[in-house]
Figure 1 (cartoon, rainbow, N blue to C red):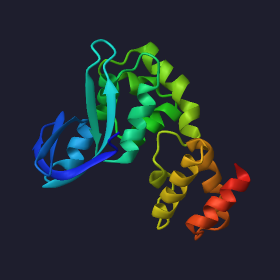
Figure 2: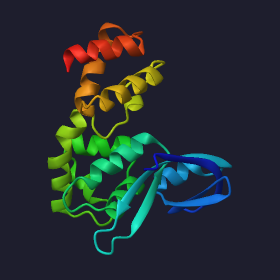
Figure 3: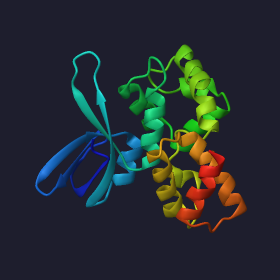
Figure 4: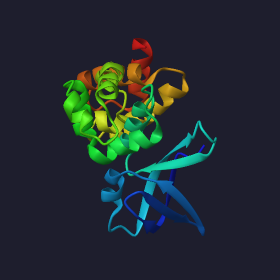
Length: 197
């Protein structure tokens, strides 16, 4: 499984990026959000999500400028009837914050403004994603904890996930721990989280 690719930005269009890593060009489908983030750069890191087309079995790699956008892509494709192309269209039309706010605010009209998203699909997105977003899914750990401790939080989150805990539960526990002790170390966070999870 490829998590991310770093290298020279060989080609960039509004829908595709080619990253040259040691002479190998990796082509990834991208959203307009990622295009805007990468434009003007010589080198880049893109976070990868591989999707298999259910119709023909073709594998397509989608690339994202941030882990946060990738988490949202995964969340959108978890909605019944929403494929990778629809998820990319949503992320090309709305920023991560606009999307979260539309879902949390049950703004069906905002979601419907995205090409290819009808009323029923917009309602399904709100219904299936609202609770997940409230629980902290669809956001990478560093987005939830934007401060100096983001590297510490990321390390603790990864360790707890490897121990088999679910990300929403981990995020909730870490938020509570950091409220009590904002400068907690990785070890302190993990120990405290193990008592809460």
